[in-house]
Every structure is written in C-alpha cells, then in structure tokens.
Image 1 (tube, rainbow, N blue to C red):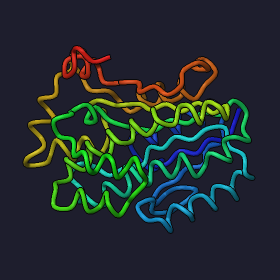
Image 2 (image 1 turned 30 degrees about the vertical axis):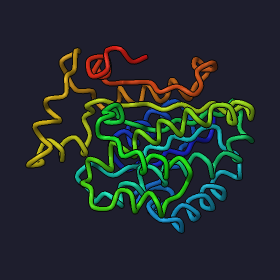
Image 3 (image 1 turned 90 degrees about the horizontal axis):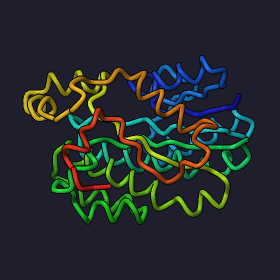
Length: 253
C-alpha cells in the first residue's frame, strides 16, 4: 500500500476517491480549502507552494500516487476557475513529480471533464497560454467570459497537458492519465441543476446509459488508473461518462 495525495478531498469525486483509496489500505493525504489534512487555496501561487511543502512534510518526500481533483464549477468566476482548474491542477502534478519519482510504481490522475470535448467553445489564446504556463496571459485571455467558457477551456487544456507530458513522465517511470467524467452525482452537479441558465443544457447532455453516475463509480476508475492493473495505461484520457462522448463526437478516437 502507498501514500497518495488527493486534492479536492473534501467533497465530490475527490472525497469519494479518498474514501475508496483509504478502504484499500493506502495512506491518503487530503488537500482542500477546508476539512483536509493540507488546507490551502490552490488558486494562488503561494497556496500551491504551501501545499507542496506541507505534502513533503506529511509524506517524508515520497509519494506513490497523486489525484489532482480540486476544481471550481462552471457557475464560478472565470479567472478563479482558470487559476484552480488548470494552473492549480497542473501544479499538483508537476510540483509533486519529484516525490512521485521516489515512489513504488507511481502514478498520477488528473480530472478533466466531458466539457472538454466541446471544441466550438474553445478559446485558442487561453489554451495556448495554459500550455505555455503563462498564467498572466491566460487570465487576460479569459477575462470577460463566463464561468462555463473558463471551465470547459481549462478542462480541455488540462487533458492536453496530460497528453503532452507522456514522454517525460514515462521516462521517469511515472504513469500519468486523466479521467473525463460525465454527469456525476456531486454537489457541483446539484448546483448546475439549480442554476437558472445552466440547468437545461446540463440536463440535455446525451447519456446512452440513461443515468448519472454516483461519485463512487468515478473513484473506481481513478483507483484502477492508479493501480497495478493499469501498468501499461499512460498518457490517456479515460471517459467515464455513460457514453456521452461517443454521442457528442462519434468520429473521434
């Protein structure tokens, strides 16, 4: 059993994943804005630095897994979403890489979204700023846009960031993948269903399986990607969405 960091551990997919990993016997270091082992705000550079140092102290400098799950919802402010959902998420991968390199069969999982597949909503200058690690330019590019635009763009950029790191991370013996959840039963989905303008589009998302997913089903997919049964799975985006991506992008592989 290993030591695994889970960001966003206080609720939703992060909480379900932390619980699942704990039941499996792993030592889980939870990271969140409250009710966590490491309480920080990943939306700021200082918060990210503090998270790394606190994780280093708690883990002794060795990690076997990281789940970068912390994120704001599409109903939040656009710039804040960019800071947390992309730059905070990527920092918890890149800045913990050295500790992962000390682990036993280490692996990391980022949480993207079904929203990342809606290419017509992409803001190219924002995506480029994210992928070149220019947080100031990303903030400028997303300024004046709504939270949903920031959300889908940040999750798209995060999925691309995982793909682009496959070579470097693979050479270091660290597997890195992402999960793209569809409609998942979390507080975020509850807020979206109650939102005056976002509720209908969210409910209209096609789901061939005809249901939403409890967060525990996402936790199962994440646990698989972290574990020994996924030893040859690397650099991939696993859609856990009841078939939504197959309907939205039927020709995409």
